[in-house]
Amino acid sequence: MNMKNRVVTAAALAAVVAGALSVAQPTFAGDKEKCYGIAKAGQNDCANLAGTHSCAAQSTVDFDIGEYKVVEAGTCEALGGYSKGEAQKMYDEQQVNKR
Image (cartoon, rainbow, N blue to C red; front, side, top):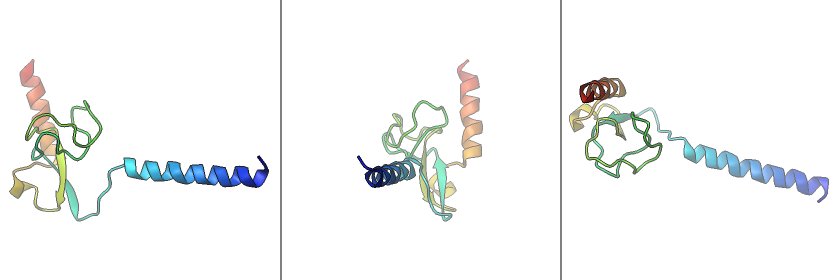
């Protein structure tokens, strides 16, 4: 393989890796927010507070306080959900009460 082919191959590989990494990170516009406690089983948007999974659609319980969905900013409370801080506090209290 000559130098030109190596450069083209390396550039193509870098583009593929960059594309894969951009998909792996959940991002959303400023008019969206994470809303905890509203996701049904299998309908969460990403990782949970417990750290037991790191992907969407892996929740196993409806309305688990540790699972979130991304919603329009300002609508979470009306949907019956919680901010991350509120959800973390409730999750931590649940863990203490299990002991």
